[in-house]
Length: 307
Image 1 (cartoon, rainbow, N blue to C red):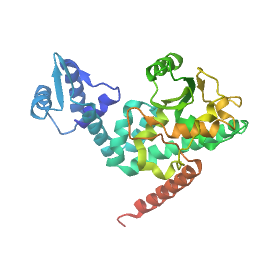
Image 2 (image 1 turned 30 degrees about the vertical axis):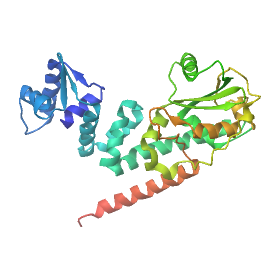
Image 3 (image 1 turned 120 degrees about the vertical axis):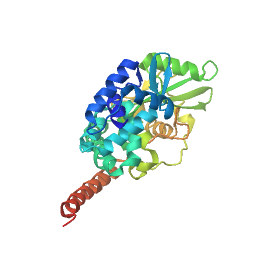
Image 4 (image 1 turned 90 degrees about the vertical axis):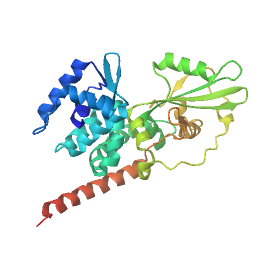
């Protein structure tokens, strides 16, 4: 089951015709030395005895993708090449693997910390160093801006509060960016409504999945206290996308900090209890050093174990 789950999760396949499932099971059997079974009996077991699969017409599928991800994770932690697999999963940047990473966090914390979390921190530190040079050209340089842009596509619009509703903003954002926002923050500003719309890339998806488990490297959130009047002179009914450009309005001394605070206060639409997570550069550097020290210590201890 673990091999079947792992092999099919790699191609993000959760539904099979009977012929396809038989072919995957034949492949699985070849990889299971000393273990034999009949494909049809196995299919009957996973459909009826232990219903991990369900049948709809002539199609068999995992009863829930989490079952596939769980067994795939079990395969990984037992593999002699688990470090290489974990690194490839991270570098693939495929959202379909996020649930597997989540399971691995509980099954083999050392694997996640020493491989995926290590690579993630290293990528952020490299990103920060490169883009801090760009941000210093802005009138209002802030580390938080770089942390936002590492994982978030942030957009602001100040529009009429009488003629707009949230669905209008989402539809316009969809037309503008060709994707739905993953988080939204709205608040009144006189006769206008200020909307913050956020799209997430793989980095932010990973941060939300890690959540409080990596709180040691997250930015401390100050009390949100933004005066809406700050945005009274902001261009109206126009989408402004946050980027590294020195002439971007959101990088100006007037708007940068209020905008950042609003982003930090936004909530992910699919995770209503989860606020946006941002990485702290200095904390990441210290954490990366700590992981390196622990990995070096672990290698020494393993070398002399049993002597």
